[in-house]
Image (tube, rainbow, N blue to C red; front, side, top):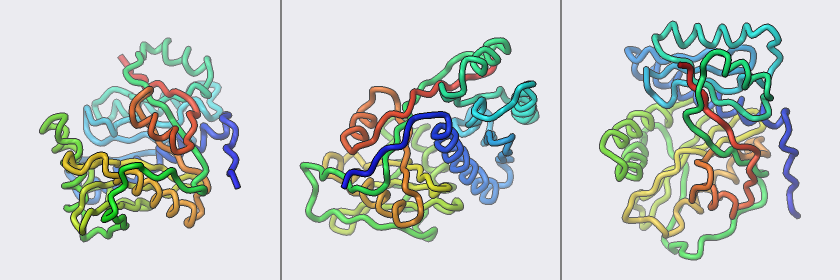
Length: 274
C-alpha cells in the first residue's frame, strides 16, 4: 500500500522548520554541556528557534521566522537582539510559505540571500529501493554514546576531502550530535568495519535525517541506502510517520532522495543581516 504525502502547505512548513530547529537546538545544547566555554545556546521565539554556536558557525541561525503570527515585527526584533547579544549577525532560514510580507520585512532591514536548500519529505513507512551495488557484508546498527569517537571519525573522514578545516569542524560537531537529546546515530559496517555514518532526530511526529557520511574507500557499495532504510524504519516505529531532509538544490543528494520517494516541499532561502 502506498502511503500518501501530506500537502505542502503552511502547516507542513511549520512542522518541517520546527523539527529542524529543535534538532539544531538539541545539538547546540549538547555542545554547551560538553564545552561550556563555547557559550552555545538557543532560544524559542514564538515558534522560531534561534541558535548560537559561535560566530561564523553554520549552526548559528534561526528557523521558522514568518510562519507564525507577528504583525508588529516584535519576533524579528527579539531574534536580532539574540544574535546581536552574541556579537554576530542574524541569519534566518526562510520558507517561501512565510509569504511576501516576511520577505519585504527582511529587505527593509538590509538582509541578503546567502544560501538555498531543498526541503524534502516522505512518509517514514514504505521502505526504500535497494542499491544496485549493495555489499552482501553490509550491516547497519544504532550506537550508544560510548562510540561517539568512532562515529565522529567516520563522519569527519567522509567530509575530509573538502578540507582539513571542514573535517575538524565535522568531527567537533559530531561529538555533540551523538549524545544530543532525541538524536539517534547509526553506523554502517562492512565485515564489521565502520564505513559510513548517519543520524536521525525524532521530533514531534516528524523525523529529521542528517549526518550522512561515507569514507571514500567504501562509496558506491550501498551504505547510505542501508542507513536510510534503517532510519526510516526507526522513525516509523517511534511515532514519527513523516521523515524530512535538507539538501543542496539539484544536487546528487537531492536526486538520490527523490529516487527514494522523497518529494520537494519547497526551496528555502537563507537570509543574513547586513
